[in-house]
Structures are given as structure tokens and as C-alpha cells.
Length: 401
Image (cartoon, rainbow, N blue to C red; front, side):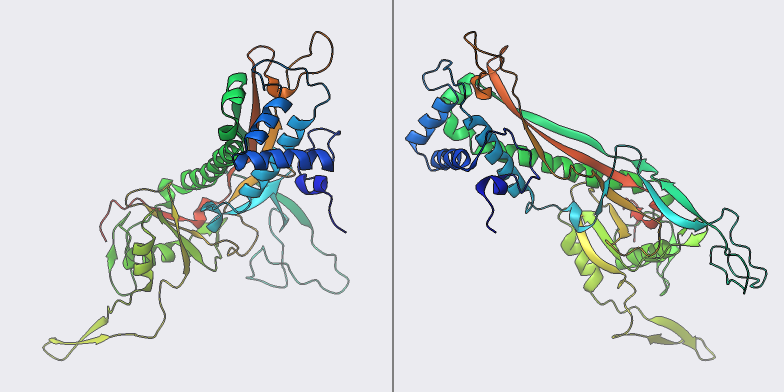
């Protein structure tokens, strides 16, 4: 069944309806005016001003005119359309999760009782493993365990775009196409900031930095080394051996996070073959050296599945984090948190214009009672949320490879 025009511009109820008096003919008429403005039609510009009570530079009684609500509906629809396909670098590396409230996010899982499962018939088995149950014996108890986020949380952010009475009169053609883009860009930047800044600040702690190590082929790697094949191999080794609650982490693959502009360098390290052999001295004089090379063997950097750039690392910094969906088990790393039912941009139209002395409401874009201005307000709700920073390794690159 074909959707009505009103169903389309409200995304079948997902976007707020600015006025119950809106219908398909009003939306279509407003859409024609807005499209005409974008095409430079003087008639459309004049129609826009007339509907908003600004055609002659003075307030005009517009009781019953629902154009402004239709215009707001179309603007919200366009913001939503521009938002969905917009490029986001955070989504290449960071997962998102929707939460029910602004409270500190808590991840629940089923765990054994606090002291672990007793296992008289299975000595030596770890207590977190479910035991066998003998014939006629009672089953052990499970308990729900809540793992509260260690850092971050979700909150609301946004801004407003004010239009004065004079701006509407003078520059309708410049204002109308600009409003959705300004709102969308500002909220996208906020989301990008929340995701990336939250991640970097969460993992950039002393215990997460790359420590001095030696690779399998004997290359010494100093603490906080510059990015190199050796330092990346050391980072993978250290990440694999991190522990949460006494158990080693389980991660299938990692993303390498680098500053914007460094992706090609990182890809070169990951995909360039380096022939470093293992030396073995033989002979009575100890002067014969044999080197073993593996041209088609295992690549120690194969655990890195992708490279992602971000503006929130700079200089020689780099980091190794679990790739999206690669963590096995219930322990969480870091996600962009969002409020359930409020995902993405939300647009509001200011409507505090009072009433005419002769009766009837004033259209919102005739200007507020105090300042002859009106506004759109864009809002987004979200924030970075971190549980277990042990999954990541970060280096500021101050050492040498």
C-alpha cells in the first residue's frame, strides 16, 4: 500500500508531527515553495515571506496559516535524510548500543555464584565452568551480575539556529536551503566527538600503553614505540595476553587506529614483506650463519583486520582496539551509547510568539514576542561508554622502533 505524503515526511511516525492540522495538500504546497526557492524562483520567495507574515516588512495577521509547520516538517525530514548517509569515521571502528535511560549503563550477564561452582567430582576444573550434574542431584544456582560502565555515559547535546524577522525579509533564498545542512553538520560533529574522544580518553591510561618487548624474531621494541612492523607485532602480543577478572581476553581481530593522513603508512607496514630470518651459528669456529626465511608462512600482523583514521589522534600516536563484533564472551570494551527511542537528530521549532491583540496565534516565524526572532533547535543524545579498557593497546610514539 502506497504511503501518504504525510507518512513519508514523518517516516511513518518516527519524526514528530509539528501540527495535527497538517495534511498531504499542505505538505505538498509547502514543498513546492521550498523547491522553488532552491531553484531561484522569485514567486516562491515572495510566497514564503507572505506565509510567514514578512512580505511587506511588517507583521501580517496569519491566523490559521499552517505553512510554518509544514516547512518545519519538511526541514526535519531533510535533516533525517542527510543524516543517514553522512560519512562517519567512528562507525568504522566503534559499535553503538541503545540504552533505556541516562543512568550509568550496566551490562548484565549470567554468572556462577560469587564463590564459583563447587565441583567435588571434577577436581582441577575452573570454577566458572558449569559442572556436571549427577543423577538425582540439584542443579547449581546462577546469578545475574551487572557490570557497570567504568567511564563515560550518555547525555544530550545540541544547538539552535536563530532567524530574525529582518533575516527572513532580506535573505529567504539563502536561509531556507542552509538550515538543514547547518543542523545536520553540527550534530554529526558532536556524535563524532563523543565517539572518538570518549574512546581515546578511555584507553589512554598508563596501564594501556605499549610496554618494552621483544618480537618472535628478536627485534627489541621500546615502550611507546613509533609505529613499525615490530611494534605492531608487540602490541598484538600484549593485547592477546591482557586479562579481565583473571581470565585472558578473547578477541578474533583488531583495528589499527591512526591519525588522519597516516592510513597509507599503516597499510604499508601491514602488507609489506620483511625478510628477517632467525640466525643460527654452527661450526667449531662459530663463524657460519644460517638464516631461516618464511616467504609464504604465517603473517604475525594478520590479527589486524583494518586501519581506521581519526582526527582525535595526532602526531605519532596509534592504537590497537578490538574490531567491531570480534570480542568473544560477555565482557564489553567500548561503545557509543544512545538513548533508546531518541537515536539520531531531533529537530524542534520554537513557538513562543504570543497572540495578537485582536485574537489569534502569531505564526512562529513572525518573530518572538521579545526580540522578533524565531529558531530551530537541533538535539542529539549519546556519548562514549567504556567497560574494560584492558582490550586496547595505545602508543604515543615517543620511543623508537
